Amino acid sequence: MKKLSDLAAMTPVVRVQGNMEVFINDITADSRQVVKGGLFICLSGAHVDGHDFVSSAVNKGASAIVAEKEVNVPDSVTVLYVKDTRQAMEDMVPYFFDYPSRNMRMIALTGTNGKTTTTHVAAHILHHAGFKTGVIGTIHALIGDRELPTHNTTPDVIDLERLLAQMAEENVTHVCMEVSSHSLVLGRVRGCEFDDAVFTNLTEDHLDFHKTMDNYAKAKAILFNMVSSEGQHKTGKSAWINKDDPYAHVMAEGVKNRNICKLHTYSMLDPSADLYAYDSRFTGKSSSFKLKYDGEIYTVETKLAGRFNIYNTLAAIGASLSEGISMKDILEAMKDFHSVPGRFELIDEGQPFAVVVDYAHTPDGLEKILTTAQEITKGKIIVVFGCGGDRDRLKRPIMGRIAARNADVAIVTSDNPRTEDPEAIVKEVAAGVEEVKKKKDSLQYEILVDRRTAINRAIHLAGPEDIVLIAGKGHEDYQILKDRTIHFDDREEARKALKEI
Image 1 (spheres, rainbow, N blue to C red):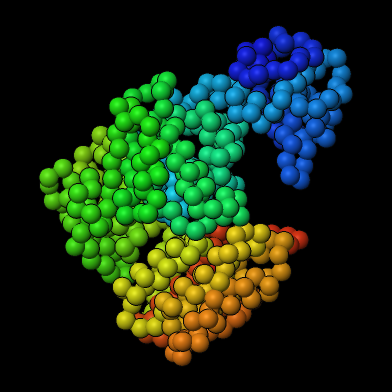
Image 2: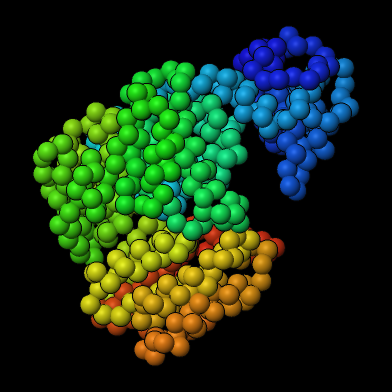
């Protein structure tokens, strides 16, 4: 609970209407979640204007309103008029929840691909070393082993600070958190104090929002500026950057003060990196590699398959080292880490071929799982994939070309079409497949817009020693259509098809 006058002191206020000495016991920007004695913030969005819901908030018991435009309220309700309600929210909310990130070690993972796996690997290592961990990311939020659902890779300021406050209350010591480029640009993580910033990679995605790759890279680099800025409350800051990525220098340049934040690198190509992995070996269910660190050579064994997962493992090892975990404990922890749901997840019903479900929904992500399949498969590679609607259209033919070049059988299907026509999306993806098909006669290629039919077809085409890759949705158990969201889980569909055969 905070006095409204104290909250107002956190942000520029244009005008006050009413009593500033009232106490606020909750904050929300959703009128449906207003409680008696709460503060309602009117956000102006692309589709909904919070100012239109002030009467609803007042009826639910709001004591105060933060607004940009004139609103009509009873005399008993105070209004803080500000120039920018979103800015006011970012200023006031962390203070309202007593800046919980200052009471825990905060490990932030950013990049196009690999964030979820790296977050879970780091949390597993820390848990193995005896710490109580929290995880915030694409799939879910975790407090210890307890799962909480999330709706965005990085929740909005209110949801995030509320969640962090809950974690701090429950004695979480380390939070491993995915931080998206959207959240950095839109200020969702303002008020968070991070201790370790980790960069996985940068490949084409979200260009509908960022417009250019340079803008996308600069958005990611905000994290490294945050972790190296003056005036923080904790010490022992670090940055771990994938040296093999073309945008590594942008992240490194984001580390403005290297006295505050130590800059480290990891690599599979450059022996001069702080963490260098080499002599990698793969099976369908595991990987191993040699690791050079601080003049010593170690052998790392993990149940994670694929070269891309070595990068994810290196990133998690780096963050763990910065948090004081010994290499001995790290190596022991890696031996019993299993896959993250929907990340190169094996579906096994006793069939003589492999079936893998993966979240790969970007050109780079798709290429990585196909490359991994080539390293571990003796037979054909059959891939089922598509692209989401209302997202970057430029990547659609690119993903078609990648699938066609790297697979023996490419089945183009629907993903989450959202407000777009699924058949129109599929045609744009298929255009890339058809380009390659002209030069690659051996490619078998089909368009099956219905995703269930496509998965079933792929599994019925598979023979001994083949691999079926079902890409794009991973852990998601829904499909977003124009007029509704339906239950749909690639893993369930794969199991049904396998049981049929």
